[in-house]
Length: 414
Ligand code: BGC
Image 1: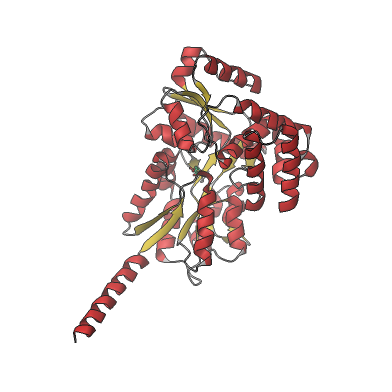
Image 2 (image 1 turned 90 degrees about the horizontal axis):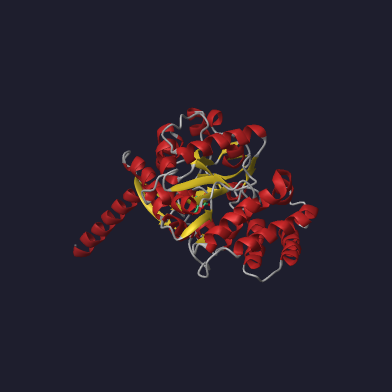
């Protein structure tokens, strides 16, 4: 009898646990910095308001490289999370494997097709099916500057590469770290996004990173881009190696460093520290890329649950695309809404600028997927590019060798 009771109790407990799990959504993501966590809370609160629990599966590491490795291991062991933060070609790759749920019913009901721009639909859909819900649009070609240092040194917004170098020199001479940087491959690639765009212009960027054209990858212009990376290397502090991006942002926030080159998730850190754009910090496009936007879009892909979309997955996807959430979340995250039909008066000045520039770049053909954040080419090529860019930044290759290595890396992984 006692055995039976024990067995029953255990069975009841298991049923309860299974039930609790079924009502939860398990979300794998890499939003672990202060600003990112604050933004994630907007989503968690939205869902908890609908009675849906949240099982958190954070995998630290900006750009999501580690998160994607953990995801692969989870799926291989037959234990895919319900929903996963993903970028660009990673979504396409998982969709090709047939792993993602078909969100068409939801998309039709809520008319996603009318409000999500083509540049995002390219990744959110596969073979005529919606497979991911776009949360936002980030862009990588930004400079973040400490306003007090700019004022003290009389530095105005640099309009060209030479002016930017002169500004960094001024900051260095005054005893500041000119460039706050975290020496991790994805951060170096993020900088390279803007540096390459500025060095060669949009056609060069398209040919090199999207079309993977060998002549362009191996060109003198690419060498110039690497030379500029070497110049930037001369403006970082001695402790840059391995530093997380948000700690680099903190150096600008605290007035230890003048500039950071980073996507607009950096703004989330400034805001989380109680700082105001225009007053405490400045945002401007990387000099020479004022007309262009190199973007990436965080999207949540839902892993297929035996052919149907669970209620929790549907609630998560609907919440993400709702106008109220798009504003509330992006205000905190530093990004701009993925929907193009919103009034963004509630966003701060950098956010309003970013939203207008994103739409203008899309209309004028100046919108480019960020290669550093998986929107120009698939992960194998992206990671091979990371290796070359980082090796060069750390002095393993001179610029001419880096160009050759880049060509080879792409040839091997294409
Ligand atoms: C993501 C951002 C994130 C950043 C740093 C990017 O790839 O798109 O949402 O904040 O990485 O973690």
